[in-house]
Amino acid sequence: MTTAHHVRPTRPPRRFASYTAFAGKIERRTPAGRDRAIDGLRAIALLAVPLGHWLLGGLELGGDGALRNASPLSAFGFFAPVSWVLQLLGIFFLVGGYASVRSYHRRTGSAAAWLRGRVARLGRPVLGVAAVWAVLIPVLYALGVPGTTLRTGSTLVVQPLWFVGVYTVVTALTPYCVRASRALGIRAAAPLLLIVAVVDLLRYGPWSDSVPSWLSVLNILPGWLFAYQLGVIWGEGRIDRVRARVLLIGGVALFAVLLLFFGYPASMVGVPGEPRTNSHPPSLLVLALAAAQSGAAILLRDRLGALLTRRPGLWAPVVVVNLSAMTILCWHQTAMLAAAVPASYAGALPGLTTAPDTLGWVVARMAWLPMFAGLLLLIGRYVRVFEPPWHRARPATRALAAALATAFALYALYPA
Image (tube, rainbow, N blue to C red; front, side, top):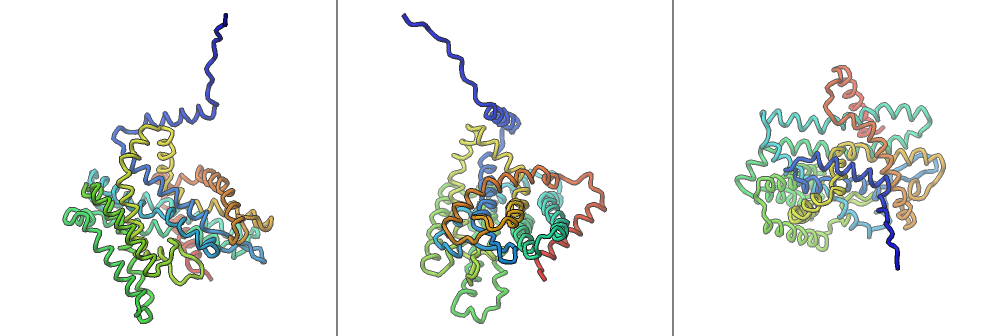
């Protein structure tokens, strides 16, 4: 005869119970009509920015004790496909266009008031990080940090901020993108693709020696407006699954042709020493990748939305990342520097202050990623104050922040 034993159900560890409660709280506060897929796509594109910079950018300690920029792509050309995966700005601009047109149609005031609100949301965090660094630089220099290290750090910090300026400009063009979308549908993106193709033909064709170097600047606006325009068209309901497949297949085909037959660099980010770059300003290869990414994102939208609806545990980090979007963009390089600059006084540390020219560096850099992420979380606790409206800031405080930010920009962009 056996005796029945009552087994007490095991409780999940406290940390998991706390996270479940946190996720449940976010789930309850999420409006029923929230487009979770769009937030999910934005979160993926956002997280690719720090991950890409942390993996594809290195710092090398010189004999003078200063840190300088270095790239593993200089030694490992086969890393280029990694940049295809981590270069998700096409999706970011796509989602930005989609969200902007939806917000534009819901506005209660004028188009100018709507734009001022969007610009202010983008500008406050940029002003904050630039002002803080303007104060940090003289303090760190007084503490003995080499001037070359400070120059390197300022360059790294200012690099992601170009995106905010470009994004602000394309956002200002939202009303015109809406008109183009309604008149032409998906064909509204074609002229942008054509402009970039013509500029590339001029600067890379057999007559390139007679073409002025500034011509490449003409690609900046149409190059990044392309995916944003696709997002507006999508938000207007003018891209169905058939057109999304055309974007995906056409983008992949164009990408392959440009890479295999027209000599475009394989890396989507700049490689030191290479005469050509794809992203600054964007080349036709960037638009091909953006088209493929956009088609894939549109096709996956329903599945992603359903997944985030079923899994509150996945939805919670998406919400946190979206609420901290500008903090992530503006401060992730500072997080890496917060680890590397103090470490430089300890000598060469693999994956942190050594040349990125061995596979050992790659393995070591992967091990440093959790520390970078932890430092970004820590920094974010204090700098997120720059994201909400500065209602309590006095005019003199705002003027001081603007002056400090200008000083930092001049220091970073015009080195002595």
